Image 1 (cartoon, rainbow, N blue to C red):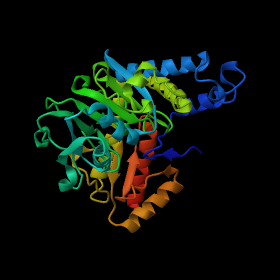
Image 2: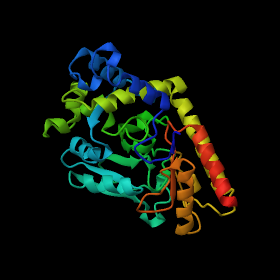
Image 3: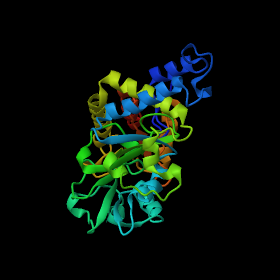
Image 4: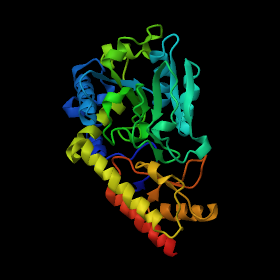
Length: 357
């Protein structure tokens, strides 16, 4: 029996993609060896690489004038690379402290430039995102960094703020799950392990005009312009992540592309939130309804003992990785792009049965 995996990361991957990769793993397309043994400079891998670069821009609807970069490491590395590349002398950047990841982004950036909190969610227990008029952007701000979806807190930025300052977004946990207003952004990044591929890299989308003015006084691997000039082949790339991402992107196109994926995400989240909201208080969501995540649904039961019983029974029923983050506890169901509607329906049915006892 294949388990229904609600893990917050690594993500559930589409079963057809896993089976296709399994069939190709030992002998890739009759080449007599695995793709992962081949030179990344050879034509066989280069075709895989270039197709992934093309597909990721196609699926996300990235406009002309943007580059997509494949950078080893996850989003946490980008917490440093963004200010290192974008903050020139005398420039500053604002950050939304919307949760654990927004706070970490600000803390790491503080080592590499003049940064400040443009909004602090601690006053609201990180249960909601800010309204645009709550965000305080200082004069001379080079960019405003936002975390589009806080994986641990289960909140998302439903609308991106248009405050006359370019946005930089960490979209790791809702990456390529919804369309975005590209005109508001200078840079968008995310780790691939939530929605796109096995862990091992981040994809960075950056305006070409921004690349013309990034910091050159850095080690080469830390420079976005170096990655762009080399088509993300300045060094040995994370081949497995790129290979798998290409297959997931193809699968997404087969499902109907970004619009279909976004519609399904809304439907899955609606099913689960309805089960929570219509449980007569048996299940409770701590999140402001206006900021509810579509990817990571968090909820509580009456006490930790009952929550543990819920988690144990769910695991026996084949519904796994529902435990909330260790910092907040509770229950968390992560429903990334490859989570089928049937998986959420199984969880909702289990919740109803558990409630009846």
